[in-house]
Image (cartoon, rainbow, N blue to C red; front, side, top):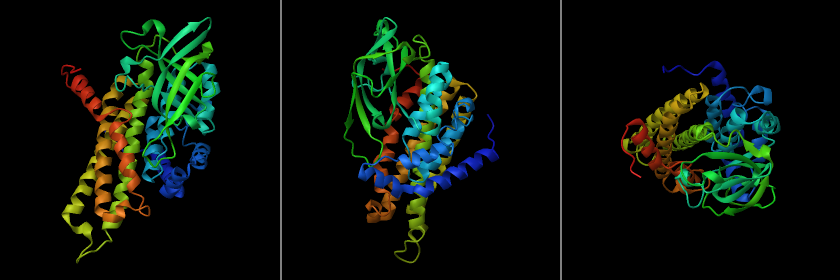
Length: 386
């Protein structure tokens, strides 16, 4: 692939999203988190402006663009200090899966709302005993006449309290052992026997994490998305966008920290020159800028391949982009906080909450170690170590 600058349309989208996000800013995001409010005003306005559903088909109210454009939305919103986690989940994972594999009825029912922000959907794959090993998923679905009965547990599922439904990854009962053949189900959050509890986290974030409990949850036949025998193809349709959006979020956080840090060290003078004139301060920021730009290029490659319909081709750059962006963001946030000294830990400067939020980028939605395993085995052809 050759590199080409962003088209005028993409540049205009970036400028519009940036202006929109700065209108709210980190203070709004932090106030919502500390007061227990959701970012509903920002979310709904983003939907009305066409930002949330920019990747979804036009015939269902979306923008008709792709993951490249949605990653622009995520990056610019995060760069303003207002990273909306549900952008990763609702339009990117769930929206893409339903748009590609859903029935006409499912598309008509869900995509317009997901596009304009009036409906949201969470995504449930992680389980307490499976962790990164998705082949150990034990949430099962069995047929009962034309219905499905779901049983299982999920953990660290984002935004369930603000979602209308959860896209649950399970397996049909006869494939409980052996290789994973995921089956995807739309489970309304008000379904009987579906319960969730919040996990207390040390994060300043309006969007919360939950445990899910499915005990004989009965669903109609049309709750199944796509085929129950689709193996991993449908998961790739959701997991590659998840990694692309995680990269975009981390790049945005890194940019936020870089901007805050540079603004401070350009003015803060202790001896004769601003402290940004000292290499111990300047060089880590310069390294972070280089690493962010490289991660961004890999993210754009992944998004371009995904939008071209190459799911497997997008997997390698999507994982690499997520890894590189997380490492760059963590390093930049740490250096920005350190460069501000005590001010880096104050509420006024808005950097301290980023210490934990950026650190999550190394762990979720897939750990850096699992990405290194993927690259070792898939890109380098090395033996599997586990």
